[in-house]
Length: 282
Image (cartoon, rainbow, N blue to C red; front, side):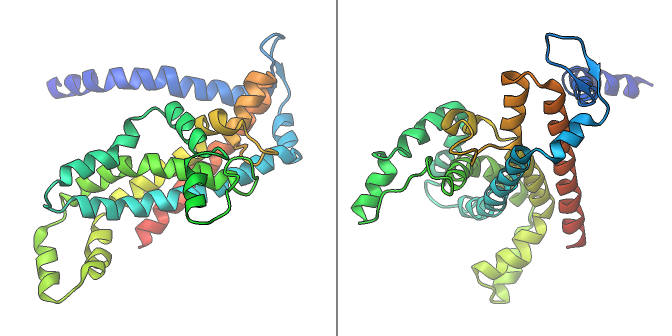
């Protein structure tokens, strides 16, 4: 009884915050997705009308396509590259702590500040095009070309996320027995062989966690689109979350925005289940 009361005293504050700021708003949004509501007029029940409207909304499907493309660009890079980064900075080399700090530093910078910094670098006369000119290459329209804009935004996300996910892999590497690498050395295994047969299998739970978290992050990315492109050019960087924001707070279509949110929620949940089943099977 004593232990149970202590457990509840630790769980209750977090549970209460989760209930007030996540669960109740989620159910409220689910209710609004079946209504017509513009903040000014009373709520009107419309059943599945908002979901039916989504099926014929070409902008929504373009936003969903953009979101999936952005996820494909971002998540594999954030799952794989930090593993090698963590392996490198996990070695007992001189000055390795400085490199850990350098790689982690972008995580400490506000996303808004990052957006303004990279917007300046992506300008036609910015740093990146200046470097290209030194190499004899033509300047690129990083944010104004509809084919370049999402890869450019994905580059910013990967740059900022590498150090963050590297920390998860670093903590996972601490639990890998060193004698496994020593046995691999005796068998003559090289660097890549040891990573494939030891590091990746032992880090599978961390890989699953990073895959899920980076997937949710990619599907929910909004700040970069808001501050760097406003969803353009020609809606080429309009993601579902940006469209939800536009529908809810610019057009005041709360019902339609809530329906989009729940379709996005179902897509993320489906990808999470697929990720888990795939890694469990492996």
